[in-house]
Length: 266
Image (cartoon, rainbow, N blue to C red):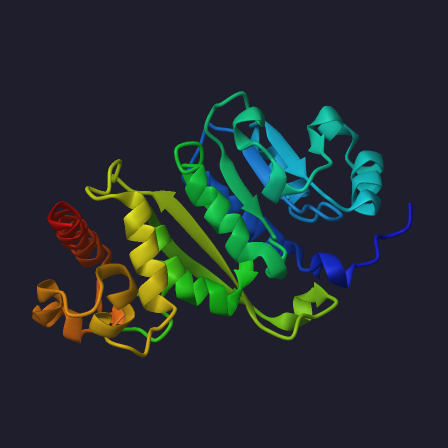
């Protein structure tokens, strides 16, 4: 069967370097003995190194041409080729509600959406590895005070330990992307409860980083309201990239208390 032609609208950049594919596949070994779901296998360059690992491997692929290629060249996958849009899948159905490792050479145009879906299913995904745009990987792994530190950093690091494994250059892809790539691994940390209202936590993180050049006092005023006494606290002189995950948790609890008090006084 002829090779699959990369489709720009699907964000496809097929990896050609087999050693890098092997290294990505080996990144799942940090979370042994559970099945693997690979997103966007394309022509199976990563799949071929996952299959010998003696664990159940399923792949999810939206591109019909890639699905046909996988069926012909990887008959051992059988019914474990899922022809769906990963972002629309019910992940509880993939392995009968059992935990699994998520991996892949992720399409750059939806990588952030993939990780938000991972967070929504964090109890099912103790480990996530794979290759993404270098800039996104740097954001996920960034620490407070770093210019790359942002929404993805806080929301993911609240639940996962992030490792930036290695950088991948453009020339090992067909077609070469215009940016460098990186391989990361995210492993669930010990946190089972944030200790705050998770919905409000997400709202505060997103609201403040969407106006990251402003101090918290200004960016958070739509939530807290202007002139609230709490805003006089020195923490509100800071910008969001200066706060750790735990400080965002503490800020959420303080805002929740302030909002509850305001509601009682109405």
